[in-house]
Length: 251
Ligand code: HPA
Image (cartoon, rainbow, N blue to C red; front, side, top):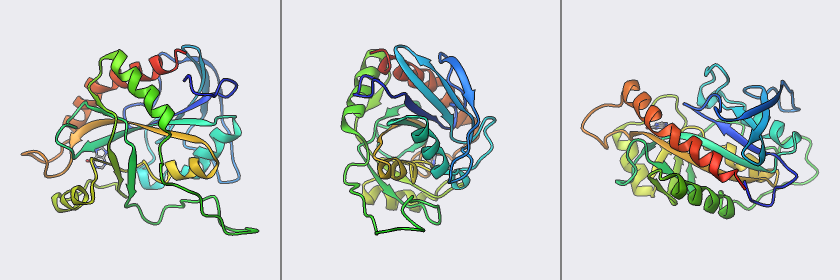
């Protein structure tokens, strides 16, 4: 990624549908442990275009850790310790905004956190002082722009704005919950955007979300949400996501 990260690898956290990153020229794999525990998967080091990259599978490889049980602190800390200062979080999401249907790519600019009970800060225990980080803009503007340019180049249908509503899961939402989220201003809904974004911010890392809509959110279509529909959208949209990642790293 051509953000000022020359000497640092870019971290890519793959979510549902992106357990591995085809196209990544793999150099090595490291199983690490942090003071916050063990991350979801090995850190896969490689090159994507001109950029050195460290890939981490958020739900493990194979995909087995549900969103509320991901050790987000270990994941972010492991990437930081490996030298990563810019993180691209790839997230499967449900679409609430009328333009954000299945297979649409979204690069959100804001988020609302509805998760609960997840360890969501590095700043607790053994503190010398209480720390409140600024989180006005949770996603890095420069990185968002680079991803948007790459999406344009690749020709993937995308929106370069949106409010990500992070829910607890692992169940999907009720139609009334989605209506409430829409009133709150949410454009998309996912289960993994938080606390990942804030933990990256606490360590001073740049963080950007690359969302792939894999279903209409509950009550936004005529039918209930099926895994078949989600798999079909992943199949259709993930090549665009991979293309965006590759082009954005090309330099
Ligand atoms: N809701 C929450 N998380 C999701 C959804 C959804 O509809 N689709 C993919 N992740």
